[in-house]
Amino acid sequence: MNSLQAKNFLCFSPISFLFYGLAIICLTSTNVSASYDGNETDYLALLSFKSKITHDPYKVLTSWNHSFHFCDWSGISCGKRHKRVNALQLNSQGLEGSLSPHVGNLSFLREISLENNSFQGTIPHELGRLSRLRRLHLNINKFSGVIPTNLSGCSNLKDLWLALNYLSGSIPKEMSLLSKLSRLVIQDNNLTGGMQTFLGNITSMEVFTARRNPFGGSIPDTLGVWKSLTVFYSGDSNLYGRIPHSIFNLSLLVNFSLAENHLSGSLPSEIGSQLPNLELLQSRNNELTGVLPPSLSNCSKLGLLEMGDNNLVGS
Ligand SMILES: *[C@@H]1O[C@H](CO)[C@@H](O)[C@H](O)[C@H]1NC(C)=O
Ligand SMILES: *[C@@H]1O[C@H](CO)[C@@H](O)[C@H](O)[C@H]1NC(C)=O
Ligand SMILES: *[C@@H]1O[C@H](CO)[C@@H](O)[C@H](O)[C@H]1NC(C)=O
Ligand SMILES: *[C@@H]1O[C@H](CO)[C@@H](O)[C@H](O)[C@H]1NC(C)=O
Ligand SMILES: *[C@@H]1O[C@H](CO)[C@@H](O)[C@H](O)[C@H]1NC(C)=O
Ligand SMILES: *[C@@H]1O[C@H](CO)[C@@H](O)[C@H](O)[C@H]1NC(C)=O
Ligand SMILES: *[C@@H]1O[C@H](CO)[C@@H](O)[C@H](O)[C@H]1NC(C)=O
Ligand SMILES: *[C@@H]1O[C@H](CO)[C@@H](O)[C@H](O)[C@H]1NC(C)=O
Ligand SMILES: *[C@@H]1O[C@H](CO)[C@@H](O)[C@H](O)[C@H]1NC(C)=O
Ligand SMILES: *[C@@H]1O[C@H](CO)[C@@H](O)[C@H](O)[C@H]1NC(C)=O
Ligand SMILES: *[C@@H]1O[C@H](CO)[C@@H](O)[C@H](O)[C@H]1NC(C)=O
Image (cartoon, rainbow, N blue to C red; front, side):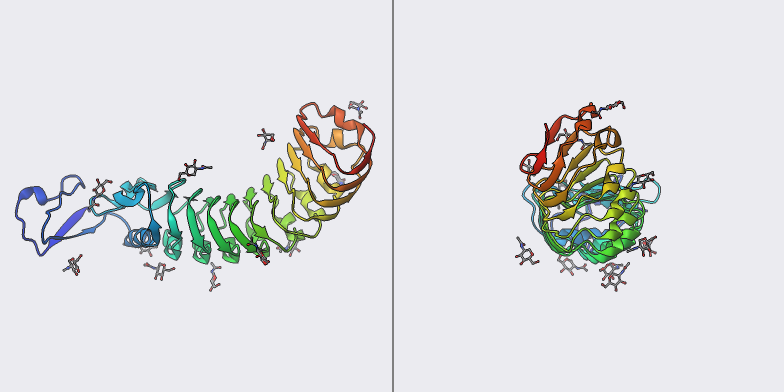
């Protein structure tokens, strides 16, 4: 039921009525308010999102006005039948401001993509209410504060992309409840607290990129249960100790980087047969000892091998 109600109606031309959702608004003294064939809560949440944007250089939010149903606003997608917002996609729009907690009211959301803008402030813990959310893409912004523990409420989350922000604190242990999480992309932040053993509980992990964070600690043995893992980047993460041998059991690994840490110990002689799909292996700038395993010559897809600045012998 699309309807426009013009209050204080002073302009009597018939063209001021609604044609197929497109309103032509009288210029003077006319208050137009829209009631939408949709959910009031979604509408209010989007208005709140807009109200927190302080700069919109490409005027992408201009279309967020009463002339259109919110499902037709740029960056918004809705379900066809229910007209509930299921995606909010505004990548690379130069938006400045904070992310409204009311976004947590968009209960049908499956995707939030706000990459490469200038959102600042914290990631609202209210997002934890979005149980249908599959993708949360917030890379390349200015978010600070911690990763909210409440995100564990997003039980369908597959992608959590928070790279290139100013996030601090540790990865909350509640993340281990995200049984579908497969791509955790958190590089280039200020995360500490080590890579804790609970991470192994996220058995759906396929891509884990955490480089350039001051994590500290060692790599837990429990990551050996990430049987679907294809990409593991944890260079420049202040990691100590040995690389647990369980990692070399992850036969689907394609790209594996641990460059620029303080890792010690040796590489297993059978690495070449254990990780047959390797395309990239980086371990330069560590404290590894022993022999550079000749079996690596059996990794037929290996395109980049960086093992310099260690105490390895062999050729
Ligand atoms: C009409 O619009 C003005 C300014 O936007 C607002 O202050 C006023 O409350 C509105 N009146 C009604 C009856 O909606
Ligand atoms: C809008 O959605 C909220 C949350 O899903 C629900 O509680 C409310 O009843 C809905 N309102 C309408 C008018 O459909
Ligand atoms: C509403 O959005 C349309 C499309 O972006 C734009 O042309 C129009 O000027 C906007 N109207 C108002 C009142 O901002
Ligand atoms: C980020 O967005 C700007 C426009 O605001 C664009 O020029 C730039 O190419 C984008 N960068 C990336 C990495 O997408
Ligand atoms: C939406 O969310 C905000 C903040 O989380 C809350 O205060 C508000 O009551 C919620 N409900 C509606 C219908 O806007
Ligand atoms: C989110 O966090 C707040 C306070 O931190 C708490 O009251 C609320 O119950 C949490 N919600 C979920 C879904 O975890
Ligand atoms: C990183 O976090 C530490 C505290 O954990 C703080 O002292 C430091 O200023 C932060 N650095 C940046 C670049 O935010
Ligand atoms: C991880 O799984 C183990 C074994 O199932 C369980 O004992 C432990 O409590 C889990 N840890 C977290 C943080 O969920
Ligand atoms: C590697 O996997 C095999 C077979 O699943 C298992 O028996 C072995 O204990 C694992 N090795 C390590 C170091 O986890
Ligand atoms: C692995 O690394 C190479 C070289 O950086 C890159 O071209 C390729 O896309 C990466 N593969 C995956 C699965 O990330
Ligand atoms: C390479 O693989 C073949 C077949 O599995 C094996 O016989 C050979 O010893 C391996 N070479 C090295 C250097 O490990």
